[in-house]
Image (cartoon, rainbow, N blue to C red):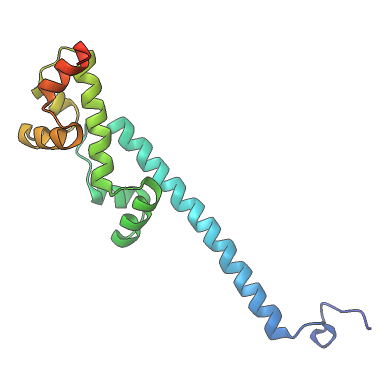
Length: 147
């Protein structure tokens, strides 16, 4: 069997079309992995930002801008990475911080709501009750007394 010469396709053991197909598939796989790593890193950066700036007014549009993704890609990738939509993740972070503040400080419920990024007290109460099953004031009593 003659030795294959990379500069002479007629000596290759495989057809040129087969080699080009394998090359194209490998390139696509490589770019997909690189792209996924990039996307995952962007989502991680956004999560870190949310964890440290939850008190600010954060929107889905801000998330899309920060990650550089289109609306549909952002929704899909954020949910894949975190297991929940953007708003649910933001509320989770805010409510965890609110629960900590209610137990560890003497701040009023209104101040805790404001410090955790809630624009209205009614929205805070509604979200808090859904998450913990009790009002913020009741949660504070339960957390402090161990009920």
